[in-house]
Image (tube, rainbow, N blue to C red):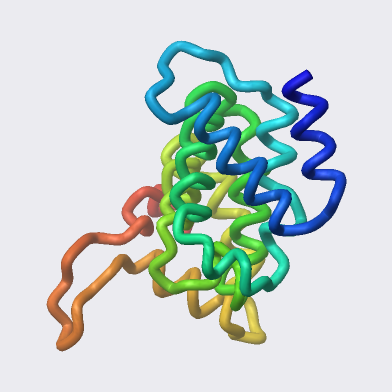
Length: 171
């Protein structure tokens, strides 16, 4: 019955209902819960739901949305690593999209792509390179900036970037 309820929420194609489903999923399957198997298809459908990748003021104002999405994605990757490339593909496709969970340059959701890249470096690199060709748009800028890592103003590096994950012969 729980999966039917999630299906009903997601069928509304409204970000409000998707965020309710995301928060509920996080509470049921992730927060403080160990050893429980999350529903594979339901979780993937939630993580890749189109309303999360469409610009919305509601997504920007839900302070827990990005945290919940990242937590659910981490658990999904742990349990279903072979399906994780489906997540990196859609996140990269919408990298830097204003008004989405993935629009900020320093979105924590981007770290999920790095985690998937650790499991599948060559495959994720192929996904990335599709978006680095001209025209150099906001997505390409965001991906390039993310690959190099976060840095403070005035050039003081604080972390190395995900670029270090990829084998040199793949780049």
